[in-house]
Length: 145
Image (tube, rainbow, N blue to C red):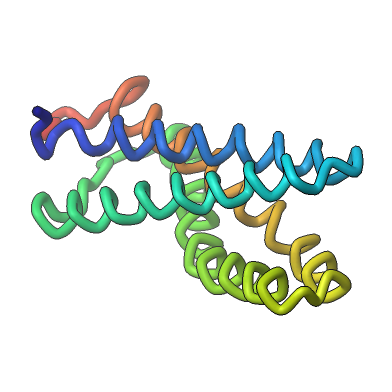
């Protein structure tokens, strides 16, 4: 079994899996393999859902973890964190709207929205993993959980 302290690593793993699936799905659709694209993107949604669930559970139980970063580290970390959080709020509705177009078989609308959804979702997934490494592995605060 796992403990609550294992959730950040598990969440980062789900983010990484989502990143790989988003990129692979993008590759497939660019090469006309729509069935493989669909499989990748649905699995990326599932992985992102697991991430979001784990993230909420962790922060409800533990609260927010302050980095306490200053200097050059703060100058790198906080802009990444700020853009990650802001775009994360945009990602969920974008993914839902993009999926709704698929279920309605409105491929032109799906493509138009997906052109925005994919890079934003990808950025949020990649920066989520980067934030995990910065906060828990590379530069952990002096009072780790």
